[in-house]
Structure formats: structure tokens, C-alpha cells
Image 1 (cartoon, rainbow, N blue to C red):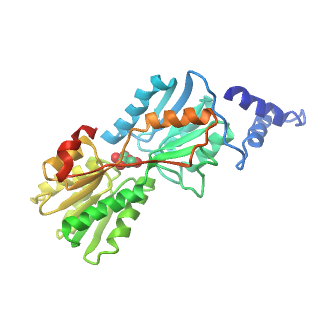
Image 2: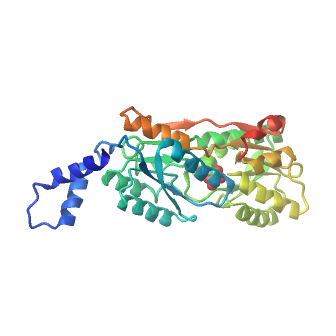
Image 3: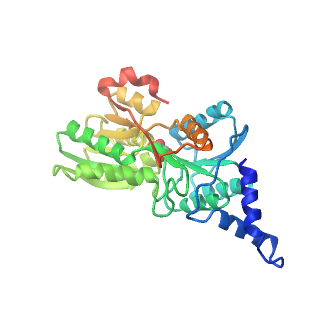
Length: 338
Ligand code: AHR
């Protein structure tokens, strides 16, 4: 049992301390000794129910809602008692949500780090407290906390590859000539950083293509619309949009229409997620293509947790493969929208 393992670790590590030391100092010492940075990952109990913390970043788009639902749906099947939080778009709030899960001594913490750097220290804190962590969807900066050493694994898509696939499609669709507006995801998120890199790596090889403006729309439809309105006024010569998610692309489509232009003709759009709204826009000819990014991490996290508890080796990255949708095959793929 993880609880007795943790308590045992603390007791053993602190028995040699002088009696004069305070209890809180003894406990801190015990935890640090049992789970130092180079220590093995904390163990996970095989028991039901398992108290699992899921710390969501925000609930501002269909992708996030589908991700949370996937954890709620799997909880009963997996024997999990979920402790669910929502950080409302704040990395600081997500840190404090996870701190509270640590204080409650949940058995396992699962979360998508809103941003790569600010969420890395809390992974180390959970390890020191003897609580294993699984990261889903987004990762932390690997120079600050490392998968397989500081947390069990990262379960998620290859965001760089998603950006490359979006760029490849745009190169073909435009014949290698485009003035592109890029709507970036949340600043500091691995999804935004890697999708930008993957896209730009491909575009750099095509002299007829350039990103003429780039700004964050925070993965939200309304911010995407507002940013697109502003950028379109400054760059009326734009011929393409690369949005880091469907919601911002849908916001951009509204802005393009409001400017009296036709999305899909005057301005070609490519994006990432594969939501129902994005797929409808592809079917309507307004959105060119969307690289799917699956939000359904609940069953995968359950499977990884059960294997880890049984002592099986887990790879540091459990890679999720993604579909791709454009006009040609959208009709037969509509059932995958969410
Ligand atoms: O991290 C995945 C991204 O975050 C999704 O593309 C986006 O819709 C979400 O908010």
C-alpha cells in the first residue's frame, strides 16, 4: 500500500534525528530523504478506490470539455475516486490546485501542465511527497523535470509533427505561395511552442511562404476572433491563417467574414484539433484542414496507472497518433468529432 510505504519511508528516515527537532522538520527531512531528486519514482498502490487528482487547466473550449469528460467517464470503470479541479486559465491556480491535492494525500495526480516551466516544480514536489504523477496532453520543460525520472510518463501527441502536417497541407493547398497569419495557443504551453516550431520548420524551406504576423489567441475562439480582426487590419494582404487550434480558427473565420472576405477562398485556413465545430467548417468549405489532436486521455491514463502499479515498465512518452481531416475525407470521419 502506498500510504504505509510513504509513512514507513518517513519514519525510517527520521528515527535518527535528535529529539529536540520539531515534528514538522522531521517530516520534511523524512520525505526529502525518501524521495530525493535522484530517487526512484514513488510507488502506486493496487487498490480500489484509488484517489486520483485531475487538475484541469481551464474549460474554455470543446477540446478541454472532452478531455475532462474522458476522465469522468473512465473513473468508475478504473476504480478511481476523482478529485477534480479547474484552474480557470491560470498556471498559478493550477499549481495551488495540485498543492492542495498533495496536502490531501491523493494516491495519484494526473494533469495537463498549462505552461511548460511554471508547472515543473510542482511535479518535483509531488515526487518528494511520495505521490506519483502522470502528465497528459501537454508536457513540462524536460530540463526542469524529466519523464521517467520525476514523473511516470507523458501521454500525448507529437505537437511538432502536428505543426509540420498543418504546414505540409498548406504548402500543397497554396502551391507554395502564402502570406500567413499565425494564431498561437497559450503563451508558454508546450502545445503552442511545439506547434509553432513544427510549422515554421516546414515553411522555412519554401521561399514563397512567410508568416507575416503572429500573436497568441490563448486557444480561445473569442480571443482568436479579436486578434484576427486586428491583424487583418494591419495585414490586408494576408492569404492564409495557421491557427494552433480549431476554436481560434473558427474565431478567425468570423473575423474574415466581418472584413468582407471569404474564408476558404480569399484566405485559406489550416488548424489543429478535429473538434465537431472544426469538422463542420471543413464540410462547409470555410476551413481547409485540421490535424486531429485527441483529448481522450482518461482510458490511456487508467491503463498506464494500472500497469505502473503492477510494476510494469512504462516508456517516458506514451505517444498518441492523430488523424487528419480535409475536404476529401471529412464526410466519412464526422463520427470522430467531439
Ligand atoms: O494542449 C492541447 C490544446 O489545448 C488543444 O489544441 C486546445 O484546443 C487546448 O486548449
